[in-house]
Image (cartoon, rainbow over the protein chains, first blue to last red):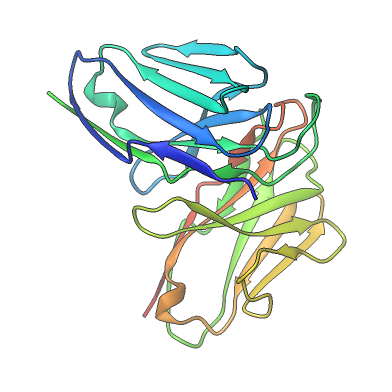
Length: 118
Length: 116
């Protein structure tokens, strides 16, 4: 059974600082996703990581995937208050090569609640 | 990308009544949709996979008679919480995965259910 662990679960940081959120998973997978959730809202897709060594960047956020280590990181650079939210990683448990399409349930980490203080 | 519309956004109902939540895929036809439940400050827990034209697949521990799922068309799945109780109060979210999005899930707005 695939298990996904995120750490830290809570993160309080000052504006301008850098930090990394980690997402470990227990079985082989080549597909990992990062989502953001604001309080009382649904989930917004941030990154899709589909291969070993994949790196994606959007603004102050950068996500990477190491399938050999079964680890993804979400790095925050020079944090700003607007980044305060809960961040979830999710893993597709299907093994095998990456193909487009199809639907499979995702397994989510517990989420990291990020608070960026002025 | 896919756009998913969920309705209603919030609902308050009395114990013992039933509540129906709709999830619509607006951009493409979805043979599969997923229903999640999220308790305050917790992660998403998959409840069931909704399959168009066939029975839903429920996760272990989820009562199929309590959470009725109907996926009668390629763009609409409904979740009905039957005989609701206060412990059913939660945030319910549906999702679809886009064929052009490499498996990325797109989520509805969520429905905040409060049973009083």
